[in-house]
Amino acid sequence: MILPSWGNLLSWRGLALGLLALVQSACSAEATPASPASPVVVDRIERTVIATGTIEPERDVELRSRVAGIVEGIYVKPGMRVAQGQLLVELDRELTAVEARGARSELQSSEVDLEQAQRELERVARLKKQRATTERMVEEARAARDVARAKVARMQATVDQLEVQLRYTSVRAPISGKILEVLVEEGSAVSALTSVSGGTVLMRLAQEDPLHLRGLVDENQVADVRIGQEGRIITEAFRGRTFLGRVRNIAPIGERRENVTYFEVEVELLEGSMELRPKMSADAEIVTETIDQALLIPETALIYEGERVFVDALKNPEDNSPERRAVELGIAADGRIQIVAGLSPGEFVRLQ
Image 1 (cartoon, rainbow, N blue to C red):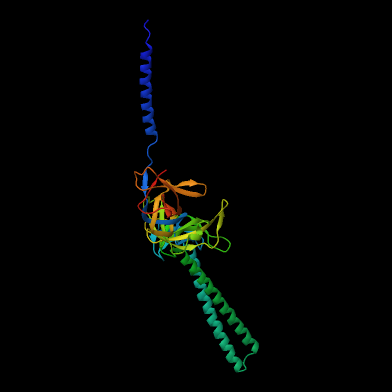
Image 2: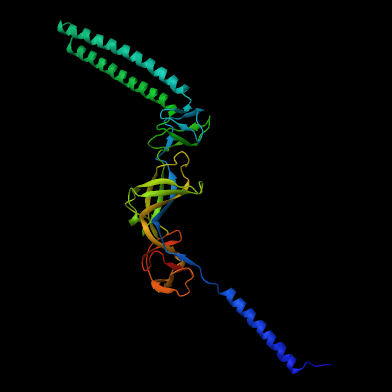
């Protein structure tokens, strides 16, 4: 067996060490690439507060039956738009109509009795003047006339009540709007709305225009919200679209939920009423402050050291000698942040 000489071994060892140094150098270069830089720009930025809630109609009405009966006809479906006064539902009116006819007949009979009692009183009064009868007969005739008059009034009230019930068998829209739900079917028995019972709910009707978002704002942010501020409505149903709105009401008292206090805020929709639907989930971006000429940098350029904030400032993107500077921050939005002090337009910052 032939053994390698010491010279050959040293030569191979030197070559291996050289190759290893080249590989380590290449790996080191790949592991520590230069950090990218971003310019300090002047642009518009907004401070926004998010109100999370649902789209609500201006009015949401539950239509209930005022009389008991059987549903005879339904003339609308969910989603239909109706005008105020339009016929929606009819109840069976046959029994009430029969009662009304009987009451009118009794009313006419009572009116005839009243006329006779009045004539009898006048006759007895004439006889009294002629001293042909007594005062007692006059009083009895007057009492009979009063009883007949009271019966006419009572029968007139009965007729009026039955006529009202007949009108109530035709349920009409109290407002213009959209039918949200129809909760009965033809042939359903319904109960009357009374002081004891709420009555059967026939359907729900919403006045759509204008719609509004009713949302909750955290107590730490509600102080920045003002009536009249712009609000942009965002929904999952219309991704990529926003609908313009305006804050119209802020609740004077908060509500506690899961140990956090929220305030209810209403944002009126200025557009989208024909597309958005009641009870859709939505957010409102309420614009509480706008700066048109703000110095902006990416938030990824910030360096936090305790309570102080710094950036690595560069003169140009190729500058390899960054200057660490303390900066004062303003509004943050969409991954960018306003620099109030510490940087100037035209400079660059190194991203972390």
